[in-house]
Structures are given as C-alpha cells and as structure tokens.
Length: 482
Ligand SMILES: Cc1cc2nc3c(=O)[nH]c(=O)nc-3n(C[C@H](O)[C@H](O)[C@H](O)COP(=O)(O)OP(=O)(O)OC[C@H]3O[C@@H](n4cnc5c(N)ncnc54)[C@H](O)[C@@H]3O)c2cc1C
Image (tube, rainbow, N blue to C red):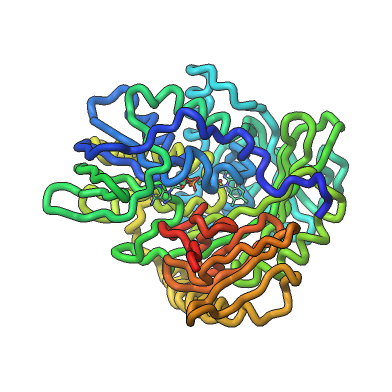
C-alpha cells in the first residue's frame, strides 16, 4: 500500500464527533429507534412533526456504520435486481419494488430540497452492463423495466470509454455524500427528537405492554422498538443467520480529472461498480461474496489497487434470499429494517415510510412485499439449509483460518493463559492484542490488512486494533486486558 493511500472511506472524514449527546438518564418514550445509520435517521425524520415521543440510540456516532462506507448511489437501476425478484417472486413484485424505489428517490430529493441539505447531491445517469457476457440478464432487465414504463437506452460503451458486451442506461438517478446527508438530517431532527450517541443498547427486555431497552447505565421504557442496527444482534426470535448471507466489497477511489459523470454497475459474477466523487475521484468497487475467504479476496484486491488509489476501504451488506429487504413487524410492536441487498439509500427511505404507516395502523402498498415474516416459496426455501451449512462452515473455517499462510509477519495468533489471542505488530513495533473470539456467536477473527481491523468471517462484526466493536452484530468489545 502506498504511503499516501488512505485506508478508510472518503465519507468517514465527514463524521461529526462534536456535538454528541450521550444518554444520561432513564427515559420513557413511545418509540425508541436503535441505530443511527441512514435507516435510523430516516425513520427518526419521519417523526419530526408527529405527536409521538421518540428517541434514537446509536452505539458509536451517527453514520459511522455501513452507511459511511457505501458507494451512495441513489438509483433504481440495481445490478439486475428486477430479473432476480421476478424469478424468485413474480413480475408484479418486481414492478412493486421498482415503484417503491422511485417513490423513495422522490422523497429523498424532496427532503434535501426542502431543508437545503448540503450533501453534494448530483444527478448522474445509471448504467447496468455486462463485461462477462451476461446478456440474458440485461435483456430481461430491459424487458421488465420497459413494461414498468421506464425509459431505457441501449448502450455498448460507457461514458468513460469502457466497451461492454451489452448495457442499458436509465435517467433520473443521483449520487451524494451520505454522511453530509445524515449530518443535515441530524441537525434538523435533534432539537425535537433526542439523538444519543456513544449509547450502545445491550439488552431489550420484553414486558407485557412495553419494552425495556438497556444501555450500560440507563433504561428506556418504550411501547415500540424499531431496530435499525443493520445486522440484528440477537439470534432469537428472528434467526437472521438462516435468512441471509453477507457480501463483502472492496472500494477504491482514483484521482480523475475527466469531468465525466455517470454511475454504473455490472450484473456479472464479479461485480464492478463505478461512480464519481467530488468531481475529482473515480470510485471503483469489486465484490466478494464469501466473508470466510476474504483474505484471498484481499490478495485479489491488492492487484486491483496496484494503480495507487487515493482511498481504499471495504464494506459489508446483507443479501436476502429473495433480494427484497426485511422491513416491518417481527413481533409485538417490535420492528426491523434491514437486508437491503446493497441498496440502502433508497430502502432506508422505504423503511421510514412503511414503519411509520404500520405504527399508525395505516395501509402501505409496499409493506407486504418486504414483510420480514413473508412466506417463502419452494425455490427460496431451499436456501435455508444452504445458509445453515454456510454458517456452520464459516464457523468451523474461522477456527482453522489462522493456520493459513495469508498474513504478513505482522499478524500472529497465540494462546495466553488458555485464551486465544490475536496480535498485530504495527510499524513501530508495538503489539496490539485482542481476544480472538467474536462475542456475537463465537467465530474466530480474520485480520483485514487494508483497514487494520479484526473482522468476523461469519456475520460481519468488526473491531479496531484495541478490540473496540466498530461494526456488526457484536455489542461487546474484544479488548485483551492481560
Ligand atoms: C460496498 C457497498 C456499497 C453500497 N453502495 C450502495 C449504493 O451505492 N447505494 C445504495 O442505495 N446502497 C448502497 N449500499 C447499501 C447501504 O450502504 C446500506 O444498506 C445502508 O447504509 C445500511 O444502513 P443502515 O442504517 O441500515 O446501517 P448502518 O449504517 O450500519 O447503521 C446501523 C447503526 O446501528 C448502530 N448500532 C449497531 N448496534 C447497535 C446497538 N446495539 N445500539 C445502538 N446502536 C447500534 C451502528 O453503530 C450503526 O451506526 C452499499 C453497501 C455496501 C456494502
């Protein structure tokens, strides 16, 4: 890695750690929102002018989770998603999903416009294309989108000159800076809805008529709980590991003075995603689908970054069995919004519209489509055992992964007093030790040599060099105090 290459997301430089309020007393509210990413903030915004008493709890700082590492395209042209939904559900469901995405985009634009949020919003046409020759998906996508009334253009070369086997272009799509957007939302919301940061929820206790939401030192009593923590950290009652897989992607930003502006994504096995940032960078993303093998992917990624990008980082999102999100009620007055299949800018807004309606007992035309308790058909049910096997495999593999010869000599594993310890020695010779066990479900960790984090190959929890939980379902640190 070059000396001046920054190994964190460009958006993370906009995270605001000033003006932070930590929860300092017990509270009684109608609605507690857990998680301050784009989902939590979008839902909180929807309560700005309501009579409900609402508060939001965020483990770290607003936006610091998956949202700060997104590519932040606001688009309905999403890596062949309509073909996938039509195959696994129906053409009607694909159309309904299309309409939901268009409605979400309109709402994001309205909010940005109404409050003059300075978030580098830019109109940029979307391209879906194949390099590997997956023309079947492009044709199907074109057919579906045309039948939905969407205007499509055929293309065989991208605006940056890249020749593709086949592609389509759609208009009225956008890009923005997701953290500037969230900072804007926080500013609008915070005087009416308390936003507590550095306030991790450790436990949710169900009572007959209400929930008790516990942080380390305080309890919030609430009638409704809305969980927006990306990967729900509890196992029961929802059994998330059986309902989804995780997809890891690597992102690099290269200097670019071409004045070109578009966004694009492939529908190939190896995803390539492109957008432009701040008129000076071209962003490229490649994906890997299996967290357990991510050290191999890091090797691939190192080849990809040989061209000396300015920024590199990785990010993880949740892929559901039928490529539709999980938004809605999972039990008595308890709601979740997750599983966005890497399209969270729009789906977080969709979540805010749906959950608001559900709590108000109003019909919402999309709520059934994305109901987290929706029934699976036979093709989708087959994925249950696959996910179970994959989870067991990831767990077992994590236990032997440390023997593989992937790491530089800066990384080693030891047993100290019977405890498995993972050690990273930095450039100054200082050793950073953490406990080599994810507190979520006990998997061993792999070292992410690009961002210098310890990552769980099973469900995506991530920890910094001191063992602090920075992402994912683990609510506990892996600090080694020996
Ligand atoms: C590589 C990549 C590229 C992407 N690109 C796009 C794109 O171009 N367009 C698009 O639409 N989508 C994109 N996405 C998807 C999108 O970024 C995510 O779906 C979205 O950001 C998820 O937002 P969230 O608020 O649900 O989760 P997060 O942003 O992770 O927010 C969850 C928050 O909950 C907090 N939290 C966790 N546990 C607790 C707890 N116990 N107590 C309190 N708080 C807690 C976390 O700290 C975090 O801040 C991409 C995803 C990936 C992986």
